Image (tube, rainbow, N blue to C red):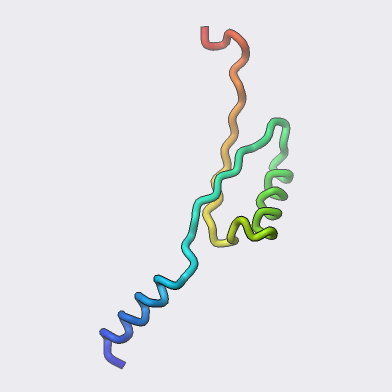
Length: 69
């Protein structure tokens, strides 16, 4: 096959391939890593998240009252 034909076939295959997305998960208050992993696995099992997606986890706690004074 010609090189140009191979490049065109590669470009078509790349355009049809599923795109990776970023999925964001927040840690719930008093949640363990195992519980967070279970929520991520459930999201993948339900089809909302692809196993190829990038998973980003965030944690945040509220500042104590008057802590920013």
